[in-house]
Image 1: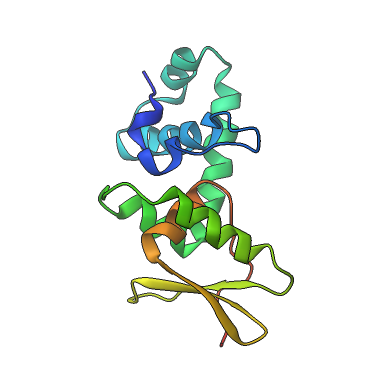
Image 2: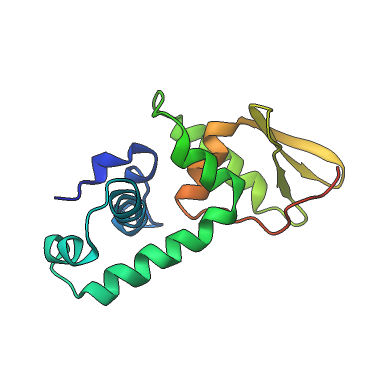
Length: 146
């Protein structure tokens, strides 16, 4: 049976009203169970009580997100210590400011949020990966320069 606890970084996700948002957690878990463990789509659909085409669409939708390096590295990373939800929300506040950009690069364990050439926040790569898995951020450019 698919459990939100299978992917703790996503399982803690909530919507604006503070309710759990299991869709992202299930999409990640569906993808990893089908691709990594080889569980057939029909078996996953039976577990969820939905049609196989629904599971297939959800797996494909998540697979399209694999082009994002943060998503890709989050799936290959070992689960670490729990993240500071307060810090995540502070970074999100900085990201909604006009002109804000989250910048990451391979090989560096920190990411930064900049706005108008001013660094407004610094966060660990694991936090940026979690934000990408939860669907809070999405890659817009693959290369750039700050």
